[in-house]
Image 1 (cartoon, rainbow, N blue to C red):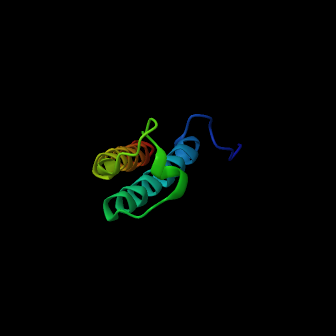
Image 2 (spheres, rainbow, N blue to C red):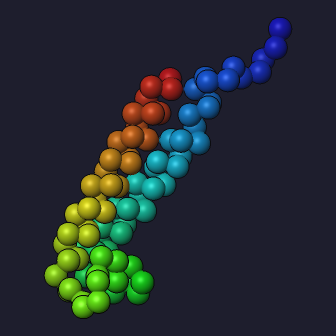
Length: 83
């Protein structure tokens, strides 16, 4: 008898869970930085077309928070279904 892991088993979703969790944490950190108003160099110019719009930190922070929460929820669901 072999003790190898069957393809498509619980172990095959582990990289997906880790990637989603890392992406979620990174986007949550970005959201906190955007809400705090920290100047983040190149990330500060995302969404600007020529003229600077300083009022969009809340919007970018909100979108980052939503992406982070969705990614963390996806990691949790993928981990839960793999058991």
